Image (cartoon, rainbow, N blue to C red):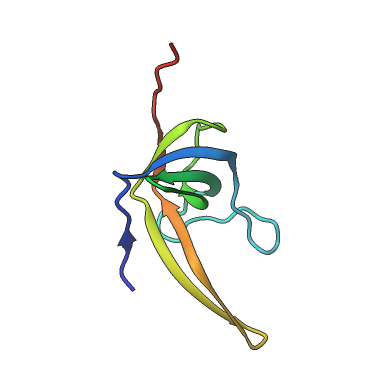
Length: 110
């Protein structure tokens, strides 16, 4: 399936949980298949007109993304990755989110 790139122009994003390493089943940090760079999980508030939700975004970066809780950010190249998993006779499905990076948005603190 092709990439499902998301339009972030009508949504504002704010960090809700600081970045942590994305771990595999053995507790080791995962690495991106294409770039071989480490993967990080960042929880973001996604706020649009009339709705809000928390999304978990995987960010591929050589270092921990330099963002903090309550900081407004812009996800770069945000994509949705639908998935299906059949295990033990049960089907699970969902959408994962991946970004090439997070750009902090400066706010006026006056």
